Image (cartoon, rainbow, N blue to C red):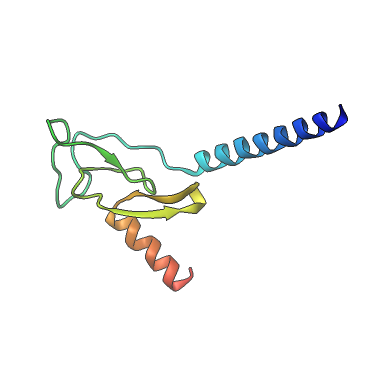
Length: 102
Protein backbone atom coordinates (compact mmCIF):
# COMPACT_ATOMS: atom_id res chain seq x y z
CA UNK A 1 0.00 0.00 0.00
CA UNK A 2 2.83 2.42 0.82
CA UNK A 3 4.47 1.73 -2.55
CA UNK A 4 1.38 3.00 -4.35
CA UNK A 5 1.41 6.21 -2.33
CA UNK A 6 5.07 6.80 -3.13
CA UNK A 7 4.50 6.24 -6.83
CA UNK A 8 1.47 8.48 -6.83
CA UNK A 9 3.23 11.33 -5.03
CA UNK A 10 6.28 11.01 -7.30
CA UNK A 11 4.13 11.37 -10.40
CA UNK A 12 2.28 14.30 -8.78
CA UNK A 13 5.61 16.07 -8.22
CA UNK A 14 6.67 15.36 -11.80
CA UNK A 15 3.36 16.64 -13.17
CA UNK A 16 3.52 19.73 -10.96
CA UNK A 17 7.10 20.42 -12.07
CA UNK A 18 6.10 20.18 -15.75
CA UNK A 19 3.21 22.61 -15.18
CA UNK A 20 5.54 25.08 -13.43
CA UNK A 21 8.07 24.88 -16.29
CA UNK A 22 5.33 25.37 -18.89
CA UNK A 23 3.99 28.40 -17.02
CA UNK A 24 7.52 29.81 -16.73
CA UNK A 25 8.12 29.42 -20.48
CA UNK A 26 4.74 30.94 -21.34
CA UNK A 27 5.44 33.96 -19.14
CA UNK A 28 8.67 34.62 -21.10
CA UNK A 29 7.07 34.29 -24.55
CA UNK A 30 6.10 37.49 -26.36
CA UNK A 31 2.44 38.25 -26.94
CA UNK A 32 1.34 37.58 -30.50
CA UNK A 33 0.85 40.89 -32.23
CA UNK A 34 -2.12 41.56 -34.47
CA UNK A 35 -2.08 43.28 -37.82
CA UNK A 36 -3.94 43.29 -41.12
CA UNK A 37 -0.62 43.40 -43.00
CA UNK A 38 2.66 41.49 -42.92
CA UNK A 39 4.98 43.26 -40.45
CA UNK A 40 7.98 42.93 -42.76
CA UNK A 41 8.33 46.53 -43.94
CA UNK A 42 9.67 45.37 -47.32
CA UNK A 43 6.56 43.22 -47.88
CA UNK A 44 3.54 44.74 -46.09
CA UNK A 45 1.25 42.17 -47.80
CA UNK A 46 -2.41 42.26 -46.76
CA UNK A 47 -3.18 39.21 -44.60
CA UNK A 48 -6.96 39.08 -44.62
CA UNK A 49 -7.62 37.67 -48.10
CA UNK A 50 -7.82 34.11 -49.38
CA UNK A 51 -4.54 32.25 -49.32
CA UNK A 52 -2.76 34.77 -47.11
CA UNK A 53 -2.37 32.79 -43.91
CA UNK A 54 -1.03 34.63 -40.85
CA UNK A 55 2.08 33.40 -39.00
CA UNK A 56 3.48 34.78 -35.74
CA UNK A 57 7.21 34.65 -35.08
CA UNK A 58 7.67 32.57 -31.93
CA UNK A 59 10.59 34.75 -30.79
CA UNK A 60 9.26 38.31 -31.22
CA UNK A 61 5.53 37.71 -31.71
CA UNK A 62 5.25 39.84 -34.86
CA UNK A 63 2.85 38.78 -37.62
CA UNK A 64 4.13 37.76 -41.05
CA UNK A 65 2.94 36.22 -44.31
CA UNK A 66 4.16 32.72 -45.18
CA UNK A 67 6.85 34.07 -47.53
CA UNK A 68 8.42 36.27 -44.84
CA UNK A 69 8.50 33.67 -42.05
CA UNK A 70 10.27 30.84 -43.84
CA UNK A 71 12.96 30.05 -41.27
CA UNK A 72 12.77 27.73 -38.25
CA UNK A 73 14.84 27.39 -35.12
CA UNK A 74 14.75 25.96 -31.62
CA UNK A 75 14.24 28.56 -28.89
CA UNK A 76 14.91 26.53 -25.77
CA UNK A 77 14.79 29.50 -23.37
CA UNK A 78 11.14 29.95 -24.42
CA UNK A 79 10.34 26.22 -24.24
CA UNK A 80 10.53 25.46 -27.96
CA UNK A 81 12.73 22.37 -28.10
CA UNK A 82 11.81 21.60 -31.72
CA UNK A 83 12.25 24.09 -34.58
CA UNK A 84 9.42 26.65 -34.78
CA UNK A 85 8.71 29.44 -37.30
CA UNK A 86 10.71 32.63 -36.74
CA UNK A 87 11.28 35.81 -38.75
CA UNK A 88 14.55 36.70 -40.50
CA UNK A 89 15.52 39.28 -37.87
CA UNK A 90 15.13 36.79 -35.00
CA UNK A 91 16.81 34.02 -37.00
CA UNK A 92 19.90 36.16 -37.62
CA UNK A 93 19.89 37.39 -34.03
CA UNK A 94 19.76 33.83 -32.65
CA UNK A 95 22.55 32.66 -34.96
CA UNK A 96 24.71 35.68 -34.11
CA UNK A 97 24.28 34.97 -30.39
CA UNK A 98 24.99 31.27 -30.88
CA UNK A 99 28.18 31.73 -32.87
CA UNK A 100 29.48 34.75 -30.97
CA UNK A 101 28.48 33.41 -27.52
CA UNK A 102 26.78 36.53 -26.25
